[in-house]
Amino acid sequence: MTTPEPRLTSLAHGGGCGCKLAPAVLQDILKGVPQAAAFANLMVGTETSDDAAVWRLNDSQALVATTDFFMPVVDDPFDFGRIAATNALSDVYAMGATPIFALALVGMPVNVLSTETIGRILQGGAAVCAAAGIPVAGGHSIDSVEPIYGLVALGLVHPDEVLTNRGARSGDVLILTKPLGVGVLSAAFKQGRLDEAGYAALIASTTKLNTLGARLAGRAGVHAVTDVTGFGLLGHALEMARGAGLTVELTSQPPLLDAVEALAAASVRTGASGRNLDSYGASVDLPAGLPDWRRDLLADPQTSGGLLIAVAADEAGALLDLARAGGFDRAAVVGRVTGGPARVRVVA
Image 1: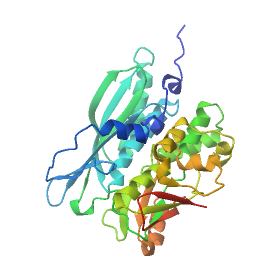
Image 2: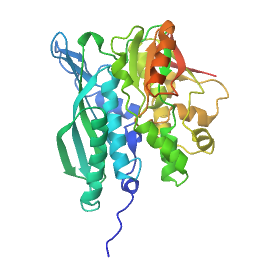
Image 3: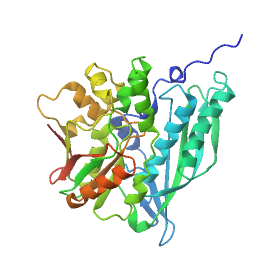
Image 4: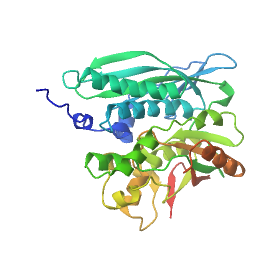
């Protein structure tokens, strides 16, 4: 009799972008790593915690390079592959680039999972890459204790149209293209508390490609872009604030995925939200009386989350129209950029 395979999520101590090292831990590790030497063609490196590296190839092309991988956030192998690939490609789109090809990163417990299951994970990733119009042109695989999958993703953008997380200007409006709550839904899934509709919302959000990013390159009024992933809205907004040397104001009630508010109010959350707040909470001002669950949602790790866009106020309406026409129908204004120190202020 064949022994049933274990649930994918049971093989991992964390899942999705909740696997990320806490911001403070990552900072502590990297402080002893020498900065990259000066290279004339390196347009974006590690200095501002941006979404990808950018290398100028010539006067009309810059190469955007990134990698992202994690452990399962769901049990369906095809869905896991789709989510991981969508998340990896997001960093290319966040720089304003168009993907050109990807390489697969695969670590699997081959004595526990069947080749069929592992194959379905890779098929899910390839399906997303096909939807993005690119091939998975190779990769690397190892035998590992926990299942890990992701991509190296490469894209192209004009050197004059690279989008970064550091160009926000005072007076800009902040637009978020996807609702928050992926971490809460994934936690509910692991606890057996997520219904069919909640699971569908989780999959729909995490497998929607952030193709809008490529349409923002060179667009009037767009000053800064990042994608909201493992550090939550607060963490990635803080990176944007630090990059610009300005204060970012965020609403305490951004759009949420269906069922998230009730689950969060019932204390469903990931451990990563607490780690995030411990890491950067000293740089965040919170309004008096803000419920803990609302605070934690702002730090909720977003696997394959939306784009956070700093855009001139007079261009915000047109950008919202563009986002919604592209299928981001929950895109919304979530804050603004003001003068002042590099920190985040949450307003009621």
